[in-house]
Amino acid sequence: MSPRKLKTDPVILDMPPQRMAVVQGKGSPDKVFSRVFPALFGSVYTLKFDLKKRGLESFKVSYPRARYPDAHLQPKEKWSIIVGIPVPDNTTTLPQKERDIKVNLETWEYGTVAQILHLGPYDQEMETVERLQQFVTANGYEIAGPHEEEYQSRPDAKVLKTLIRYQVKKKSR
Image (cartoon, rainbow, N blue to C red; front, side, top):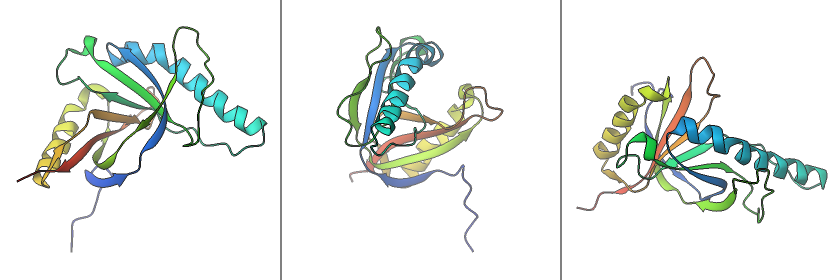
């Protein structure tokens, strides 16, 4: 009998490309998020309700995601952060809700990914990240994309839920 699979166990799976409403920032996540989330959520919710008003198919607003392409190279105060929320694939324009912060459209590529659910404070993710990285290596893969997090709970939740994800590829021999 195989051991019971926990929802906090790492997994490798395939994910399709995802159309995203995106904002970029630089600095510590707590400072960047408070600055960019109003523009990002404002744009996405306005898109959702505009579609509904026009009688078109709307969508469920999903969890925000953040990519940290240089987190392993910089101190936290200098991180480049790309924050996104999935939007329908056929989205071609986004309403802009904040004058100073532009919300762009991008397609985030995924393919094969490794991910793990971290339960607890953001500043205690390192052990979970290391567990995921060891899992990737032990299964014959290597990381092939930036560190990504999907925030599945509000920052004020009793237990924070964060999916930590990397694009991976099979190691070449």
